[in-house]
Length: 261
Image 1 (spheres, rainbow, N blue to C red):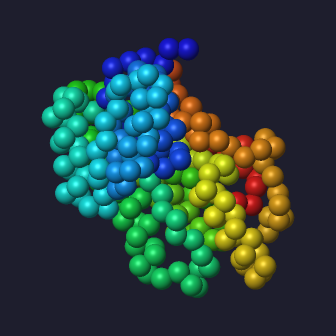
Image 2: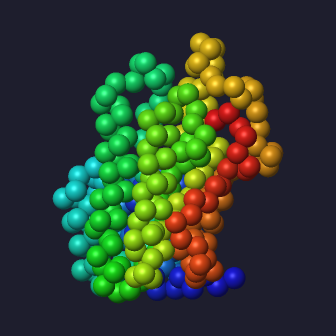
Image 3: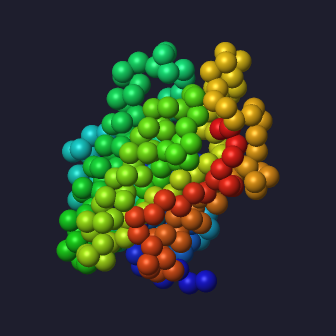
Protein backbone atom coordinates (compact mmCIF):
# COMPACT_ATOMS: atom_id res chain seq x y z
CA UNK A 1 0.00 0.00 0.00
CA UNK A 2 1.46 3.36 -1.03
CA UNK A 3 1.42 5.76 1.94
CA UNK A 4 2.38 8.73 -0.27
CA UNK A 5 5.34 9.67 1.93
CA UNK A 6 7.93 9.78 -0.83
CA UNK A 7 9.92 13.01 -0.55
CA UNK A 8 8.23 14.16 2.66
CA UNK A 9 10.42 15.84 5.26
CA UNK A 10 10.00 14.10 8.61
CA UNK A 11 11.41 15.27 11.96
CA UNK A 12 11.44 12.52 14.60
CA UNK A 13 12.32 13.34 18.21
CA UNK A 14 13.52 10.59 20.53
CA UNK A 15 14.94 8.83 17.47
CA UNK A 16 17.63 7.14 19.53
CA UNK A 17 15.11 5.14 21.57
CA UNK A 18 13.50 1.85 20.63
CA UNK A 19 10.20 3.36 19.47
CA UNK A 20 11.68 6.48 17.89
CA UNK A 21 14.24 4.45 15.97
CA UNK A 22 11.57 2.10 14.61
CA UNK A 23 9.43 5.06 13.58
CA UNK A 24 12.33 6.78 11.84
CA UNK A 25 13.32 3.63 10.00
CA UNK A 26 9.75 2.98 8.88
CA UNK A 27 9.18 6.52 7.60
CA UNK A 28 12.50 6.46 5.76
CA UNK A 29 11.61 3.11 4.20
CA UNK A 30 8.37 4.69 2.96
CA UNK A 31 10.36 7.38 1.17
CA UNK A 32 10.50 10.24 3.68
CA UNK A 33 13.70 12.10 4.47
CA UNK A 34 14.14 11.53 8.19
CA UNK A 35 15.78 14.02 10.54
CA UNK A 36 16.69 12.17 13.72
CA UNK A 37 16.66 14.21 16.94
CA UNK A 38 17.67 13.43 20.50
CA UNK A 39 20.34 14.16 23.08
CA UNK A 40 22.63 11.18 22.49
CA UNK A 41 24.58 11.46 19.22
CA UNK A 42 25.80 7.86 19.40
CA UNK A 43 22.30 6.44 19.66
CA UNK A 44 21.09 8.71 16.86
CA UNK A 45 23.99 7.60 14.68
CA UNK A 46 23.07 3.98 15.39
CA UNK A 47 19.57 4.69 14.09
CA UNK A 48 20.97 6.43 11.03
CA UNK A 49 23.19 3.43 10.32
CA UNK A 50 20.24 1.06 10.68
CA UNK A 51 18.45 3.07 8.02
CA UNK A 52 21.53 3.20 5.79
CA UNK A 53 21.96 -0.58 6.13
CA UNK A 54 18.66 -0.94 4.29
CA UNK A 55 20.13 0.95 1.35
CA UNK A 56 18.32 4.17 2.27
CA UNK A 57 20.45 7.29 2.14
CA UNK A 58 17.85 9.74 3.37
CA UNK A 59 18.40 10.38 7.07
CA UNK A 60 20.34 12.96 9.04
CA UNK A 61 21.23 13.37 12.70
CA UNK A 62 20.19 16.57 14.50
CA UNK A 63 21.42 16.49 18.10
CA UNK A 64 18.99 18.41 20.32
CA UNK A 65 17.91 18.70 23.94
CA UNK A 66 14.12 18.89 23.80
CA UNK A 67 14.01 20.47 27.25
CA UNK A 68 15.76 23.60 25.91
CA UNK A 69 13.74 25.93 23.70
CA UNK A 70 16.80 27.44 22.02
CA UNK A 71 18.00 23.95 21.07
CA UNK A 72 14.61 23.02 19.62
CA UNK A 73 14.33 26.25 17.64
CA UNK A 74 17.86 25.78 16.30
CA UNK A 75 17.06 22.23 15.20
CA UNK A 76 13.89 23.30 13.40
CA UNK A 77 15.68 26.18 11.71
CA UNK A 78 18.41 23.81 10.53
CA UNK A 79 15.91 21.40 9.02
CA UNK A 80 14.09 24.24 7.27
CA UNK A 81 17.37 25.65 5.95
CA UNK A 82 18.40 22.25 4.59
CA UNK A 83 15.05 21.09 3.19
CA UNK A 84 12.83 24.14 2.91
CA UNK A 85 9.91 22.57 4.77
CA UNK A 86 8.81 20.29 7.58
CA UNK A 87 5.98 18.01 6.47
CA UNK A 88 5.91 15.55 9.36
CA UNK A 89 6.72 15.88 13.06
CA UNK A 90 6.74 12.83 15.29
CA UNK A 91 7.33 13.43 19.00
CA UNK A 92 8.54 10.30 20.77
CA UNK A 93 10.24 11.31 24.01
CA UNK A 94 10.17 9.44 27.31
CA UNK A 95 12.21 9.41 30.51
CA UNK A 96 13.00 6.46 32.82
CA UNK A 97 11.55 8.07 35.92
CA UNK A 98 9.51 5.57 37.92
CA UNK A 99 8.75 4.95 41.57
CA UNK A 100 6.28 5.17 44.42
CA UNK A 101 4.25 8.38 44.58
CA UNK A 102 5.45 9.37 48.06
CA UNK A 103 9.08 8.81 47.10
CA UNK A 104 9.16 10.83 43.88
CA UNK A 105 10.49 14.36 44.29
CA UNK A 106 9.41 17.60 42.65
CA UNK A 107 12.51 17.41 40.47
CA UNK A 108 11.37 14.06 39.08
CA UNK A 109 7.98 15.44 38.07
CA UNK A 110 9.52 18.60 36.63
CA UNK A 111 12.00 16.63 34.53
CA UNK A 112 9.21 14.58 32.95
CA UNK A 113 7.11 17.70 32.31
CA UNK A 114 10.05 19.55 30.77
CA UNK A 115 11.22 16.72 28.54
CA UNK A 116 7.88 15.38 27.35
CA UNK A 117 4.96 17.75 27.76
CA UNK A 118 6.79 21.04 27.33
CA UNK A 119 9.18 19.32 24.94
CA UNK A 120 6.28 18.47 22.65
CA UNK A 121 5.00 22.03 23.04
CA UNK A 122 8.41 23.34 21.94
CA UNK A 123 8.73 21.17 18.84
CA UNK A 124 5.19 21.86 17.68
CA UNK A 125 5.64 25.58 18.29
CA UNK A 126 8.80 25.40 16.17
CA UNK A 127 7.26 23.39 13.31
CA UNK A 128 3.72 24.74 13.05
CA UNK A 129 4.52 28.15 11.49
CA UNK A 130 6.22 26.42 8.54
CA UNK A 131 3.34 23.96 8.25
CA UNK A 132 0.82 26.80 8.21
CA UNK A 133 2.80 28.62 5.52
CA UNK A 134 2.99 25.56 3.30
CA UNK A 135 -0.65 24.62 4.10
CA UNK A 136 0.38 21.08 4.96
CA UNK A 137 1.45 19.22 8.05
CA UNK A 138 1.17 15.92 9.85
CA UNK A 139 2.01 15.62 13.56
CA UNK A 140 1.92 12.52 15.74
CA UNK A 141 2.57 12.75 19.45
CA UNK A 142 3.52 9.46 21.06
CA UNK A 143 1.89 9.53 24.49
CA UNK A 144 1.09 6.24 26.19
CA UNK A 145 -1.69 4.09 27.56
CA UNK A 146 -0.93 5.50 31.00
CA UNK A 147 -2.70 8.66 29.92
CA UNK A 148 -6.01 6.85 30.51
CA UNK A 149 -4.95 3.75 32.46
CA UNK A 150 -2.07 4.67 34.81
CA UNK A 151 0.12 2.25 36.69
CA UNK A 152 1.46 2.88 40.21
CA UNK A 153 5.14 3.28 39.28
CA UNK A 154 4.56 5.56 36.32
CA UNK A 155 2.36 8.38 37.57
CA UNK A 156 4.55 11.28 36.35
CA UNK A 157 4.69 9.89 32.82
CA UNK A 158 1.03 8.87 32.89
CA UNK A 159 -0.05 12.35 33.96
CA UNK A 160 1.98 13.92 31.16
CA UNK A 161 0.56 11.44 28.66
CA UNK A 162 -2.95 12.58 29.58
CA UNK A 163 -1.89 16.20 29.09
CA UNK A 164 -0.31 15.35 25.72
CA UNK A 165 -3.55 13.75 24.58
CA UNK A 166 -5.52 16.86 25.51
CA UNK A 167 -2.98 19.16 23.86
CA UNK A 168 -3.14 17.04 20.72
CA UNK A 169 -6.90 17.45 20.44
CA UNK A 170 -6.77 21.17 21.17
CA UNK A 171 -4.17 21.87 18.50
CA UNK A 172 -5.90 19.60 15.99
CA UNK A 173 -9.02 21.74 16.39
CA UNK A 174 -7.07 24.94 15.82
CA UNK A 175 -4.91 23.90 12.87
CA UNK A 176 -7.20 21.64 10.87
CA UNK A 177 -8.16 24.55 8.62
CA UNK A 178 -4.52 24.75 7.49
CA UNK A 179 -4.48 21.14 6.24
CA UNK A 180 -2.56 20.11 9.35
CA UNK A 181 -3.61 16.89 11.02
CA UNK A 182 -2.48 16.20 14.60
CA UNK A 183 -2.99 12.86 16.31
CA UNK A 184 -1.58 10.85 19.19
CA UNK A 185 -0.47 7.24 19.42
CA UNK A 186 -0.77 5.63 22.85
CA UNK A 187 1.36 2.49 23.14
CA UNK A 188 0.66 -0.09 25.82
CA UNK A 189 2.97 -2.92 26.84
CA UNK A 190 5.69 -2.82 24.18
CA UNK A 191 8.65 -5.21 24.34
CA UNK A 192 11.43 -2.72 25.11
CA UNK A 193 13.93 -2.25 27.96
CA UNK A 194 11.73 0.60 29.20
CA UNK A 195 8.73 -1.70 29.54
CA UNK A 196 10.82 -4.22 31.45
CA UNK A 197 11.83 -1.51 33.91
CA UNK A 198 8.25 -0.34 34.44
CA UNK A 199 7.12 -3.95 34.94
CA UNK A 200 9.84 -4.50 37.52
CA UNK A 201 8.96 -1.30 39.39
CA UNK A 202 5.27 -2.18 39.43
CA UNK A 203 6.03 -5.69 40.66
CA UNK A 204 8.00 -4.21 43.54
CA UNK A 205 5.13 -1.86 44.42
CA UNK A 206 2.73 -4.82 44.27
CA UNK A 207 4.75 -6.48 47.01
CA UNK A 208 4.19 -3.34 49.07
CA UNK A 209 0.43 -3.39 48.45
CA UNK A 210 0.54 -0.28 46.28
CA UNK A 211 -1.25 -1.65 43.22
CA UNK A 212 -4.69 -0.92 41.87
CA UNK A 213 -7.59 -3.34 41.47
CA UNK A 214 -6.42 -5.11 38.33
CA UNK A 215 -5.20 -8.66 38.96
CA UNK A 216 -1.47 -9.28 38.94
CA UNK A 217 -0.28 -10.90 35.73
CA UNK A 218 -3.28 -9.82 33.67
CA UNK A 219 -2.64 -9.97 29.93
CA UNK A 220 -3.99 -8.08 26.96
CA UNK A 221 -6.67 -9.62 24.72
CA UNK A 222 -3.92 -9.93 22.10
CA UNK A 223 -1.76 -12.47 23.98
CA UNK A 224 1.68 -10.97 23.45
CA UNK A 225 3.69 -7.86 24.07
CA UNK A 226 3.64 -5.29 21.33
CA UNK A 227 6.72 -4.48 19.27
CA UNK A 228 8.28 -1.15 18.31
CA UNK A 229 7.25 -1.95 14.75
CA UNK A 230 3.59 -2.10 15.84
CA UNK A 231 3.92 1.47 17.05
CA UNK A 232 5.86 2.58 13.97
CA UNK A 233 3.20 1.19 11.65
CA UNK A 234 0.48 3.12 13.50
CA UNK A 235 2.48 6.33 13.22
CA UNK A 236 3.14 5.77 9.53
CA UNK A 237 -0.58 5.35 8.93
CA UNK A 238 -1.44 8.56 10.77
CA UNK A 239 1.08 10.69 8.88
CA UNK A 240 0.09 9.16 5.55
CA UNK A 241 -2.62 10.11 3.10
CA UNK A 242 -4.43 6.91 4.08
CA UNK A 243 -5.73 8.70 7.18
CA UNK A 244 -6.84 11.91 5.55
CA UNK A 245 -10.01 12.30 7.62
CA UNK A 246 -8.41 11.55 10.96
CA UNK A 247 -7.29 14.30 13.33
CA UNK A 248 -7.43 14.97 17.04
CA UNK A 249 -7.56 11.25 17.74
CA UNK A 250 -5.71 8.97 20.16
CA UNK A 251 -4.85 5.65 18.55
CA UNK A 252 -4.28 2.97 21.19
CA UNK A 253 -1.60 0.45 20.28
CA UNK A 254 -1.94 -1.70 23.38
CA UNK A 255 -3.27 -5.11 22.46
CA UNK A 256 -6.70 -4.30 23.88
CA UNK A 257 -5.64 -2.62 27.10
CA UNK A 258 -6.09 -4.91 30.10
CA UNK A 259 -2.53 -5.72 31.22
CA UNK A 260 -1.26 -4.39 34.56
CA UNK A 261 1.75 -2.54 33.13
